[in-house]
Image 1 (cartoon, rainbow, N blue to C red):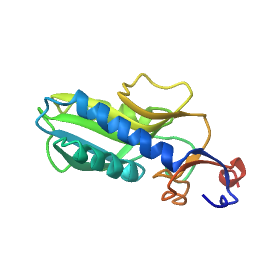
Image 2: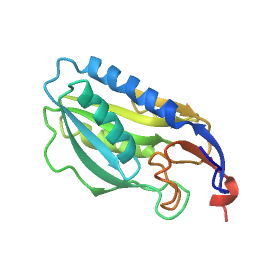
Image 3: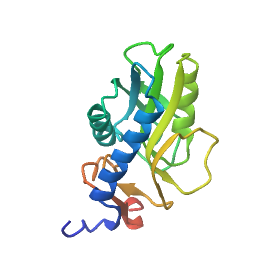
Image 4: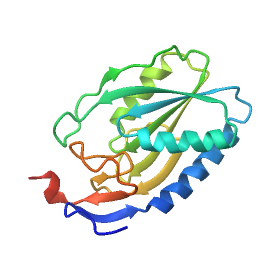
Length: 184
């Protein structure tokens, strides 16, 4: 894996562990939606794009009919404090009567996923499910989370789509960011 960047404390989830878990999640999703004609998968930008790409490739390998669309939301702005959620980019087509799976990179406070879940629920999908690569071990809002890749400690993480100030997003693993890197 080589030397870690000086702003990274440690690797929390290896590339191999991610690959294995994504395959497992795809098999679980395929099994749960075996009678569904088409799954409408909503990737949340920017963070979920790498996870979404790998997950949907695995679903294709399992012959799971699906389409992919994207939404972009903002809840952080330029600080590390979570704020109000707003939609920056919406879906391209209606989801009424469709089976929808929201794919998120991380569930931190749960505010973003809760907001999005309730917005999409109001659009009357046939079913609405959620999937996240990582979930921080902390108090969360009461939002359903159907598929979870990994539970992680309550630390700032980067890699595999997750970033800090648009850095580290394309690392092939998930690493803990040193506190001094985001408190400077």
